[in-house]
Length: 171
Image (cartoon, rainbow, N blue to C red; front, side, top):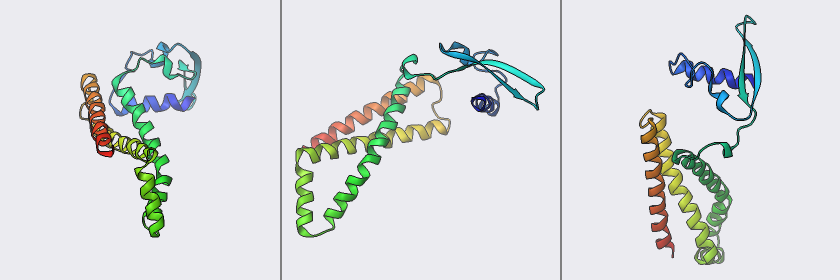
């Protein structure tokens, strides 16, 4: 638990801030489930006590477009990872005998195969555009609150439009 406080302090120090974003009290005071956490730094010279979160859940946060985009980015990454074995199976069938090729082609043209391809394509498109958004944020572009919300909405809109086009192409 003490490492969390040290890492937060380090981030504030790197950004050149002298105080916590919510004053000297710290961010943790405003969370509903907190406990007193005491840690020592500086060789035991100074001891501080601060309210630290027990385990914040997603239900205590107010959902914002950027938060939804981040959660969807993780979910699309999981879908892409789960598709890798299917992709390898399809690749093996396409490079195999003519009977294997026909079986894979029949599977790809079946409704289940098209649905799997559509979900994977949707995940890939969204993950790509949202990854570009994260790279821009890491580079320092669009870090204010309004711009982050706007970019998150634009990425979700591009994702929906691309998913609709992909659905039309597959069916």
